[in-house]
Length: 190
Image 1: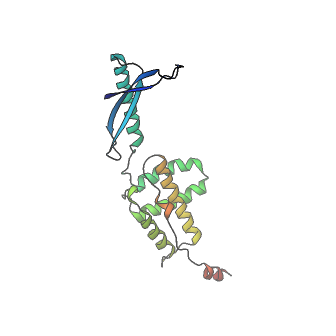
Image 2: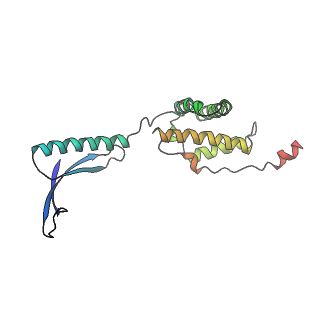
Image 3: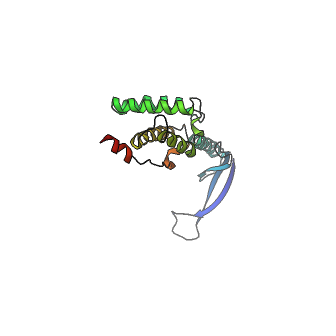
């Protein structure tokens, strides 16, 4: 911790030449997220041992708050663990059929990607390939509406992860699906 002395205009004084000395206590800390150094500071009117002690305590509190706000809860969470936590909360929020649909969709998503896949490592490119494969699958293709539903569930999963600090970004936001023409399917239904 170091002290910087500053002279500022006295807000209480009516004369222009009245200056007041302020003491700015500054401390540096290393950000665990970026690895760069940042500064925190507090300012007091006096400079004595009691003020130094208070300033050191306040700076320590500010550093703790800054570090805690930057740290993630668990950045190495697997998609299966994330899906389980999400579904536990989602069950309380929606109707049973909606919950059941999300459970089936996310179970298949976790199975296809591998249950031990780290959620932070899933990219938009991977999701584009996955959704295109499901849409144009030779054995059991999904309809456009089915793919939209799968995409929605995956997006909700990652939004939950962002909200609670498990993942840094939602790769679904930039997914672009090459929609299939369903003209033939509609003609076959007639």
